[in-house]
Image (cartoon, rainbow, N blue to C red; front, side, top):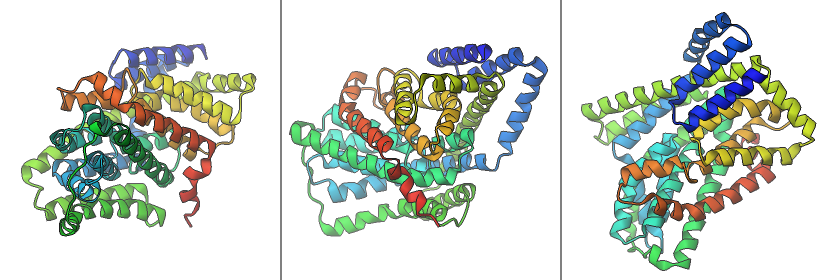
Length: 430
């Protein structure tokens, strides 16, 4: 247990120091297992863990969903969704921000990455909001907060990672993420309306779009509806597995982009290269996380933490609240993926021992990591946005995020207090 504790402390320190997470986790795990058990076992576990992961049928969803998101992103189809959303809600005060949030949720439904959602929508929506004299706080805050929906509205890469780490059905996680994701979108839109009503200078009123143009703009919605319906509808109806859904989603995205005449050879090459780069990076990080999970078990740290929690007398919702507070504090200084990879293997056995549903816990964890993406001082979505919008000060982005963080805390409390909200849709599956 001592070796495991030291290894965890070193892993957290390396994450703070921004050491590449994959190599930090692998180095800490191998060293820890070497000291706790023996070095032969440590070195033998590395190729076994990597081969098991690479050959995993479930893990094949990762490159397929990344490919699907890249096709939609790099072919400009995301701009069509934004224009459609603006056509219907752009005339109300704050309508451009509302349109951006709707577009973020739609893009999230085919992307699965918060960073990609934030970066794409910054290029698509921010120029329009500045043209209509939206404040930097509301414009940048809307995009950064809307980007967080990318890891909750399925398909989601972080859901896949969580499912693999905890051996939870990925399809069940996708279905469970729908209602909390839509709930989050609704709360974000209420926050925008509140900001616009409190200080109209933040959000000028847009022009009304005639109905013929509204109907024409709807042509930008069907690719997202089709992809989302195929993936979530197929999983809900048990027509195919998440891996099959990912393959069909990627194939359909390519067909849609080809149908629009936007998938040139140069774009296809960029999509494939970006997909390969992102997939390999994510696989490498996951290898390290799987090794860390083995270290926690072999060193006795997981069992020790479970015994420690039981000795404190904390149980039920009170225990979950304490764990969420830990995640929230960590989210202020650590990347969300690092939090999931390092701490989920440690806390998952405790949640199981308390009789909680791991699907529900997974959604709660993802909501917490959403908050972590936009909280100072290390809100990764904020720095992604800063890279795309170098003229907007970081402090101004964080200031604009305060209302969105507030409604996120409310959503987290409601989902913890009422697990049925998360599990309802999955319970209706036949």
